[in-house]
Length: 112
Image (cartoon, rainbow, N blue to C red; front, side, top):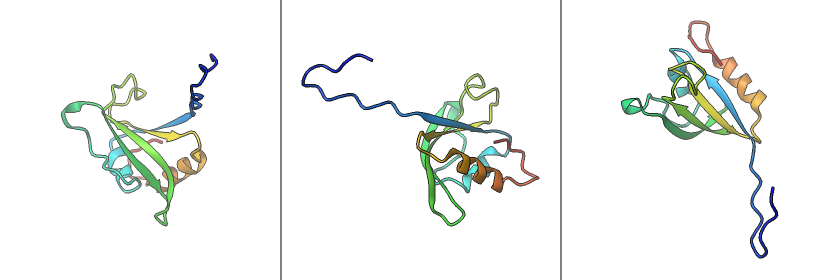
């Protein structure tokens, strides 16, 4: 990292991000009730991102997230129907995974 120029404010540190993949034919309907943004498929097959929050069972915000849909299989881990959740570095990832796992029903075809 190079030193800042004289008189210039220091650059903010780059924060670490976490990415979770939710895939399967039921991924979008599964996430629709757990996040505050629309998870419907993007129009025209182009990649789309939506900002939202993951909520606890009491409706409290657990973490902010950016949901990515319609990404090519090479980016989404080989799953055309995958939704990627991009979480901030400060997010309680273990709690988010636990929440997602707790809402997964046996009849749903979803992998977290």
